[in-house]
Amino acid sequence: MSNLVISGYYGFGNAGDEAMLAAMIGALRAVDPAVRITVISGRPADTRRRHGVEAVHRLNMWSIARSLCCSDLLISGGGSLLQDVTSGRSIFYYLGIMQIACWLGCPTMLYAQGIGPIRSGLARVFMRHVGNCLAGATVRDEGSKIELAGLGIKTSEVVVTADPVLALASVEKDSGRAIVERTGLPGKGRLIGFSVREWRDQDHFKNVFAATADLLVAETDARVVFIPMQWPDDLQTAREVAAKMRQPGAVLEGNYDTETLLSIVGNLDLLVGVRLHALIFATVMEVPFIGVSYDPKIDRFLETLGECHAGTLETISTDGLMERIRKALVDGEATAARCQKVSTLRDKALQNARFAIEWRRKKEG
Image 1 (cartoon, rainbow, N blue to C red):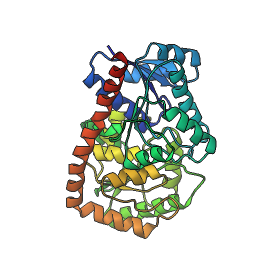
Image 2: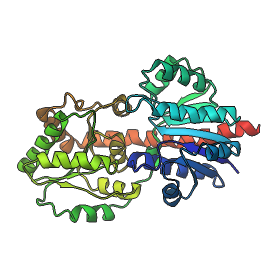
Image 3: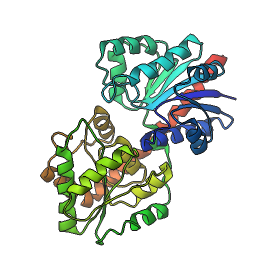
Image 4: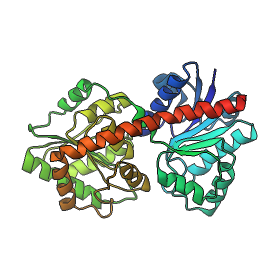
């Protein structure tokens, strides 16, 4: 039986990270049904309830060390843990957990990580030191593999796979449809979803999203709904954008789990998203989407699909976004082509778990 510890940004109400954890656990159990998993979490009780695993608090270093002593492998991932753009401190936490595992003789792997940007000189040195102690690494895009090489990390096995969430199966749409219907949105046109987030006190994109949503309602009788992916952080931003609209729109207020969010997204005719995992949820549910970039991880994900963003939070314009939306709503060939690429990415996402069990077994050998 495998004993694995998973380190990541879990227990904080981020839908993308909770979906990643669910996907990782599901894939690992598919490869090894007897696997025993302990998750390092900000809210261990919630993680145990949601995911059916053992959990220890992320600040209880004694419990973490004890779990690592009994573990065959530390999994660091997935997501964008190893970067210092959204936080200059968190990268040291995640590298610190990996360093403790190294001291305790527990092999470590990066699991579908998105690497960088890492700007701090100290963080780059620490990353190089810890990275060269890895049993192996899977990364979710080619850019992340290039980042590791640029940091001087010479781990023998670095494999480009795909984001773990792409391994999730699509879900039924009834529960999501009921949630949208309860908003009482007028109109009978297409259902357009927006996923927004706060970013460095910027307001430009909020005005653009509100103006675009107004045009969609006025011109096409669209129904506009804002879907917070990190609760409650995104909720306030969504309310701000909706308040700028002159036409009716709705903000989904609930703190929804992964399956419910997937169901909601599945009812959309189009998603306009800033959050990476909003775009990935749309991918899983085969819903057309348009990405707006604030971070290289958005660009990299879109590049894996042979696409590009509609603009950054600083450069996005109402005219440009409306042009992309109009095209996406009628371009069935592009949606079909994307679905074909997603099938390949789904297979790659499942490979992450196979590598984890393989690298764990190296310890046994």
